[in-house]
Length: 266
Length: 287
Image 1 (cartoon, rainbow over the protein chains, first blue to last red):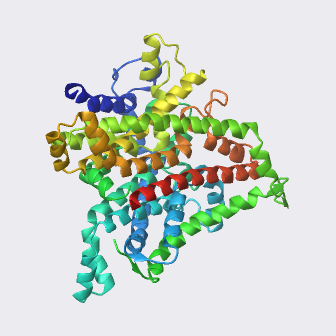
Image 2 (cartoon, chains in turn red, blue):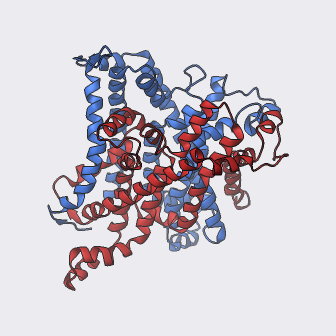
């Protein structure tokens, strides 16, 4: 069994890499080669597609926009989730269990259900087509997730830590910021990772809430596809570039992923 | 852990409460509002009572979309959960391969959903896609844009590709939390590999697996972007899942009343099923 089973992860990774390889492969081809021949690697290697993206503001601003609202969302979600998770892990209060489940129900809300009302709401408050609108809309599913993860981590920290600090005369907020937050740094990393992930990959709401100024890269891709016919090489290059920020983030948190899943409740 | 009774804790929760309430309650009330009214398009609304709810509950179209949705969700759960556990069991526990495996496996999780759809759309095309071309070369008559069966096959394969890693990561985290002493004890008792799996590994993975099932259930029931980019619900209506149908009604035909009623029924179904899962999960944890 052992000899066979060693190949299972390798086979799985090959399966995962194939579609990605095909996308990357295509991004280095000319449109003619993509449509004309079936080639396993680029015969007429070209960087033209990438040059177009990095020199045309309608393309590269898409990346800037996406990264902007994702960062705002991550910071905001984790910042407000920290005290709330602390409350859930340390105190009993009126309606705590119901509140916790209600928060989770928002993680279940289908984005398709909320797209149109969100458009109306954010137009009404004058935030339509801003980074803040998308960042705020994404807190709907990221805050519950961040609270869930952080609560798991905080419950793993013994209560004696809080009590000792109290006896030593630390004011609460000073204890929270100087002692408690560094203790659960790994948990904050994991929560931030998941907020980044779900905000980066979500498109339906991001697309609904933006028009020009804050349009995410993934939306630029779909709109370009419909207006100028299919420039497959260009689309493939843009798609390849959307994978890179994710790959970076995974690389930095790789040691926390497994640990984070085990300690936190996600 | 013993928790102290403290009503002031509400102040800690307040920012979260305000933000989520702004995002959840206002849109939800908008949906409720639409669901009980009739309009003739000139911004005047009439009370329609439960008319739309009756219409949706009795509509063949809704039943068909719900059926397809349930089929999709249970199929991907039946594939992804066992496959994810199997891969986690065979993963290395130590050494540099752990990092390599984790990073490569987590990659699909961080690709924007429409890029996933577009990637698979191209990958599976019978003329220029690697998968489509290969399947046709070895003798299958494969064309996912024309044949419903092929469209379903591609859709499910795409979801397995996209999300099995989440199950792998969760199960793996459950496995590494098992102390070595358990395995040594099993070895001394001469336990067979299956017995180790059944009585040591599976119970330890129970919590993370419940979470995996819950997350995969919720997310697959809400799935919209990937199938809409891959097949657009076609050919015909063969892969029109609930979300796709909903967007077609709400934004395509602008039938806000029926769309809103359908949204609420849809949301209630997810809520009810998740509540059952959640309650079971909490009961297990309390034990």
